[in-house]
Amino acid sequence: MTQISGKVASSDRFKSPFSRGQSRQKQQKSLSDRFVDVMIVIAIIAVVVVVLYPLWFIIIASFSDQTKVSSGQVTIWPQGFTLAGYLRVFQDTRIWTGYRNTIIYTVLGTALNLVVTLPAAFALSRVEFKPRRLLLFLFTFTMYFAGGLIPNYLLFKQLGLLNSMWVFILPGAVSVWNLIIARSFFETSIPEDLHDAAQIDGLSLIGYFMRVVIPLSSAIIAVIGLYYFVGHWNDYFTGLIYIRDDSMQPLQNVLQSILLANQTNQMGSGNGGQNVMQQQQIADQIKYGVILVSTLPLLVIYPFLQKYFNKGVMIGAVKG
Image (cartoon, rainbow, N blue to C red; front, side, top):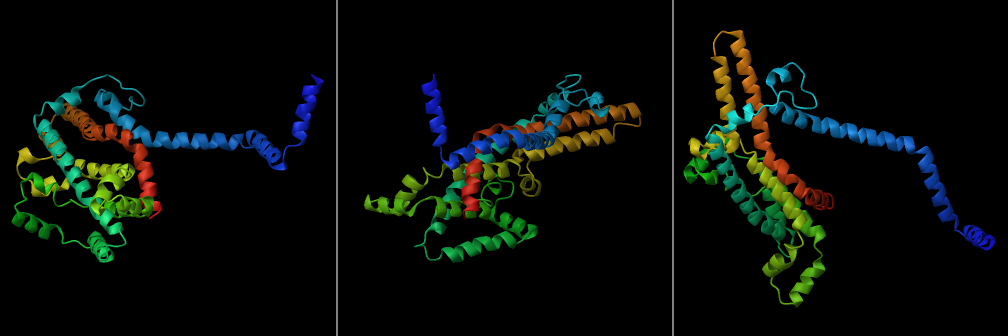
């Protein structure tokens, strides 16, 4: 036993000053910085609660009796569980048409965006492509100067895009911001040595892009794909201005028309105070249900893309 303790003591004696300093720092942190660590954790929890509670309140309010919601009884859990708001929303057959249209516009639009943006960004990232600076300037110019609403309406009318699904897809085929992010990713994150190796193997530039660059760009594809997907899903202005056929309206415009129709019924419901209060409660139920119906698909998709989202934004934006 004495022999073992002597070996331990000798090993401690021959430890470097750096390792002994590290152990002392760990002891000091565990003793003196514990309060700071606790305060940081409390601050993070407070921020998470502040961000998530409004969403949680909408969820529980949509399943609660609106009388208890308006009286302030609903805070953490649903009170007077009911599905009346969702039943009123889904009883309108237009909402299924709106869902179908939005899914079609979003899937086709996002696919076209990726097909156009990725090759364009790759071309602008190549040094041997001489006009790239001029083209990038022309792309960037459109971010600050546009024709305006009336010229766009006249242009879409002449192109035959009004009251057509293509008005949701073709005009926004390229987002300059996403193009710049993808270009920065290709310039900074794809080694040029891979291109040299691909040339030795006999690959053309298109083959190099399809077989090497695209498989290595899953992060940036997920990022700009999510950007495009959210943009198409939340597109409200296009349907409001350029679509007159109700069967072509996306989900956001259908939900807005449901809310407006309910508010109109509330205003013309009569002079009785009790009746007006009931109509207001129905309107609130529909409002909470509409918010969840329109945002639920995005809430479901985002967690699967979060790791790519964080990685792709940092690589494409910070290094660029």
